[in-house]
Amino acid sequence: MNISTSVFRYRARPDTSRQLHERIVSLAGQRQRFGYRRIHILLRREGLCVNVKRVYRLYRNAGLAVRKRSRKRIGLTERVNCP
Image (cartoon, rainbow, N blue to C red):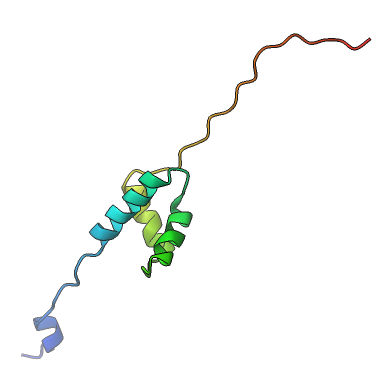
């Protein structure tokens, strides 16, 4: 047969997405105001060579989103006209 040995002896690469997914979820839990871009920077500082698009995909698949800040409510006050 004319089949190359690389096809015949294929070995799948180990799945590193699971470990990365767990790390992204833990970072997002610690820093709730951090989005995927800042989490990507933290992962790079830890020494992981990860693409931003991959971090975005895993971030979205985990159902994570940046928590929005609540607006400050201004209490009702009476207006005073200046004389």
